[in-house]
Image 1 (tube, rainbow, N blue to C red):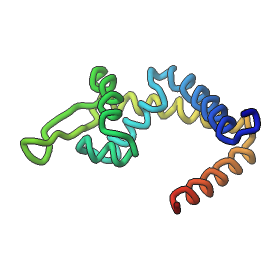
Image 2: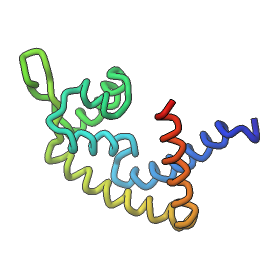
Image 3: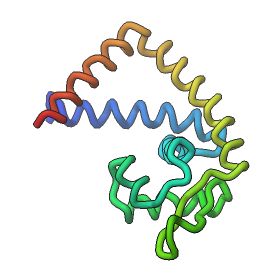
Length: 138
């Protein structure tokens, strides 16, 4: 398992996620929460099903992920297009939280570049883009 591409990729992903999460924790967020806030802001008002499709996650996973954002008052659920639907919007508090987290995200990106080197980061991005295209074609 030591030379397994999957195991190495998982280890690298965990290291990078921990790097970003530790910086974003200073803004009171996890990387996944910032991702959700950013997508809500981009798509709002957005129905939960549409948001789940956009993120590529299961609706029940989305519901669990949105709970802390709703509790914190960073997003709100409102009426949708008809009486049976709901829509999600970013609140003023959510926009402020996203702005603070955006600054921490820039720091995390910069320190990742410093740690790995800008050339290695560019090569990794290119390799990931190529790999994603290959998987998308299947």
